[in-house]
Image (tube, rainbow, N blue to C red):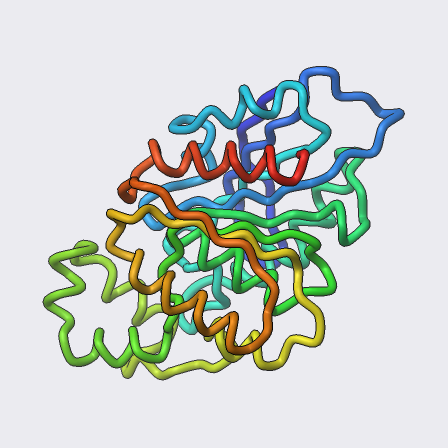
Length: 255
């Protein structure tokens, strides 16, 4: 079953888009795992539905897939904008549990995403590791936030050329006009403070512009003794790669 529409969020104080993908034989007598699937920078709540085979993978699954909309927020509580982190991690799970028979157990709760959604999945899971049993992040951006903000301040033209002219405005909305570094949004800082970790599954294509960042990030995880899995294969930053990544993830964790 595939449902797309809007819900009203008290946290965001507005209607926001949402897509739900469920197994075909959805039953009230069964409790399902739940996976929150986060879109990338230029996407929305229907992107994974439109550009991947997720509806096919979900047909015979034991998981309800929740696809929220977070605009271009990087899943953060923005300085000038909306509190998407609070919406995704606090309000959205309560809304979904009121409508679907989904498990409240940590080991049955998954968060995943690609690109901006990969960063968002890691941010949510590492900030609230008691809430998520599995986190899958595909070709994630912002793995080294502090360095990225420094580079953006001093070489904004490069970022605009690579990611579009809107990106700088997105970061101003999140961090303020001075692009002030916020440790709570830094994945490495979240790792330092975490006492427990979800199962981390990372992937990146070897032809992806984030590939070298992933190799360095994996070294950081190893140095901090954080358990994780990392898969790489020849691929670029596109939905041919993202579709393969989510298929691998669903198979790996028997979703």
